[in-house]
Structure formats: C-alpha cells, structure tokens
Length: 186
Image (cartoon, rainbow, N blue to C red):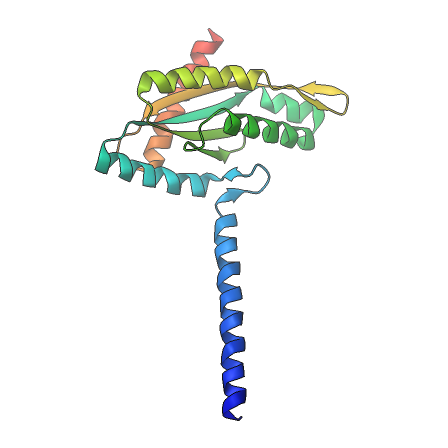
C-alpha cells in the first residue's frame, strides 16, 4: 500500500469508529428507556435515583420519591386485551409526564407501576402532588375500539434519604404506596 492509500484507510477507519461510537451511545440510551412509553425503564430510573440521592447528600436539596401503582388496570387487560392495556399505559405515562415539572424524573418500574423523583419538594408538597396525580390519572379516559378505558392510581411518597440505596428507596416508596392504597379502599 502506498502512503496515500494508508492515509485514506486511516480516514475511513476513523469515520467508521465515529459511527460505531454514535451507535453504541444510542443503544446505551435506549437501554434505559421503556420503548413503549418513552419514559425511563427501571434500570434508567434506578440510575437517576442514585444520582439524586448523591445530590441530596452533597447539597441537602429536598426531594421526594413517588411510587404510583395503577388501580383496576388488570381488568382492562383481562376484558379488552393487552393492546388496550398498552394504550392505556401510554396515556397514563403521558399524563404523568405532563403533570410533573421538566426537572422531575418519571420512570416505569414494571408492569403498571411508575416512579417519579420530585425535586425541591418537601414531604407535604410531595404528598399534595401525589394526591393531585391520583386525580389526574382517574380522569384519563381513553377511547379504544368503542370502549372507554380508564383506571385509578395510588401514589405513595417518601423523602429522599441519602443513607439508603436506590433499591431501598423504591422499597420504602412502594410501602408508602400500599399504605395509601389501603387508605383509599377505606
């Protein structure tokens, strides 16, 4: 190979490397996002929660974690099929994102469960936001194949505690959600 051919090959390989790096970055980003709902998946949410806990520890910023479980969602899947359930999940996820601040973080923790990191939120404000979101989720009315689909929500809230891990924080918020679910059922 001549020197010109080698230089051309080096340029080609550098361009191929740049394309490969972009593709890897895109795949890494996709690995953290629920492709159906366009919110973070559990992996991405736990990563962001870890960052939030570190920030709270360093700066003392008040923040809260909300755990939202959909009430009555299983019956939508059972009566109308999983495609209907998926459509309702998309509507609810969009509703949550629209009713939280851009600085807050929303993720799907699994099935019909969502998490939200609420920045600059003391426990009373976070609890009030949780009640507000429960009401907005209940107002979601999705028209699907001639049926109107909807569900309720129970939202538990805990203040971020930097002494806990993300998994422990999610467990604490899940416990708060079950307490709220029992309250709602009377």
